[in-house]
Length: 331
Image (cartoon, rainbow, N blue to C red; front, side, top):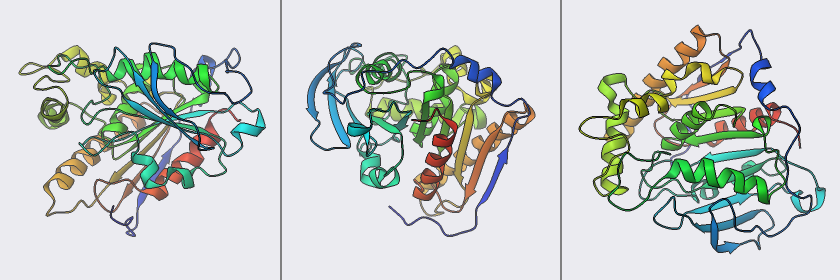
């Protein structure tokens, strides 16, 4: 990975006048947590564990059989340093990887998530999302089930709450991701309005329809090529318009009210790298559109425009972690 850019960054924090009242109400009624003692996780919520490693004191690994996915997806669960001794209940971050044949649930472990979270009171759940699953249930698949949205929201999320000491409520959950995973985070936070109190997109696209629907077309092309055997996420040649609108962050602006929103985009992609240029140029334009709509609606958000292209920026992931921990329920 290229070194983080040292170019000056532009950033902003837009505060909403209304505060967190509406969203906070969704998280009231007490925490629904698992038992206080650390224990081996079990099957449930449509997930059957077929492989596991709980030997590391912090990073626990699982692979599941599930009817939602035609192969066995993996997940890393990163525990706080004191999880096994504190007896405390913790907030949870769901952290999503980007797209590509080399991207999977191990991505953030390779980048340094253990160091970034050392001493921090938060559980980090990092699941598979497919090489081009787009955090969606596709319109059609020729490779068997690839229902990533079902796996993440209907199966994995309640499984985590059942097996770890979590705050199983709105105020106890954050969702974040890079690239395709940043889109997934924005999508889930809006579509499942009462699930996540904080949402972050690190170089994640926020607009599906701009520039003649370039991001939607890319989701279809990439998923057809490496995920769905010619099937598509949104349908082709005609899109499933209702599904596009349901997933499109810029069409779901009110769903971000009362949430912490954190956005990162690069301003100077590599001009000789077609992939870098197309990706981050579209990310930057889409995030600016998204930010403009949030501002017009008086919805608070924090944004960072930083030199460089389409990459994870560890210093901003660390900043994001600090902000979400301050925002979520305290362990």
